[in-house]
Image 1 (tube, rainbow, N blue to C red):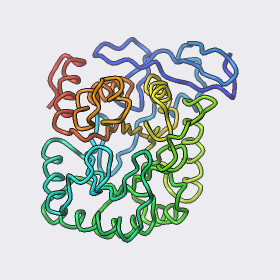
Image 2: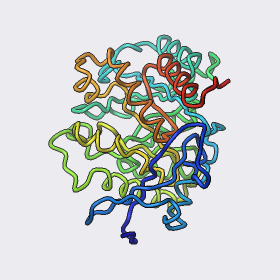
Image 3: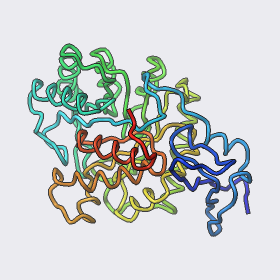
Image 4: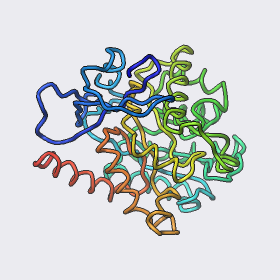
Length: 342
């Protein structure tokens, strides 16, 4: 039974042939005719899309406005550029500014439409980095990459207002906060004042302790509720909803089973009414399932997860292996549509 406590997950489909009356997913490449109705006190049920209440249906179907001049009618790749010595996958590989700038330009050439620059590792067990150290890692890279011809929007991956402020002054145009803007209240004020796009991610606890026996009543609904409430709080603080992106936070305070529960029902998050970003690239669960211990060798598994996410309408993929993922997406889109996209 549908009630005010119900959650609506579109049963997303892709393909050139759409039944009459099928609803679009966020104005993108997917569509649906039915939804899975979820609740905290009853079994899931499947109903027709026409039975979904108007506001909930509108949140799922409405086209997402452009962010940083990027349209969401096709998948967007965000390239990961860590300037840290200890990130789980590529720590220390971009040790100099010149090396990091070269990688940023390579990722742009390979198809990355956003470059996400981070100076603090948020791998499980990582300690907090002093703001001054974080600034010294990211600001020169942003400045020199822009001077070298990087035209893709630069996202600053930080939890700290002072870092974001200097990064924006250096040329960054987005803020990606893995704490969902809960770590530093001043970062909310900065985002509201600057009116740059932001990404709000869910994480359970601090990176240092987040994998210490994480627990949820219902991981899917708990993450959805957090993101919904946090988006509303940020809008109330002066951040336009049209500038907000949501990330369910795969691997941040979540077990393998939690991650899979989220991935299998990612389309629920379209109900937030904002674009969805997925950052699953090279995460530990991919190595566990794919039986690959070395993070840098988890590209194929990461692409498998990415394509599954596209099949649920996820608009932005945060990835390490940009060229390989771009190739996979081009073939996936061609196979689904039956024609090559330009």
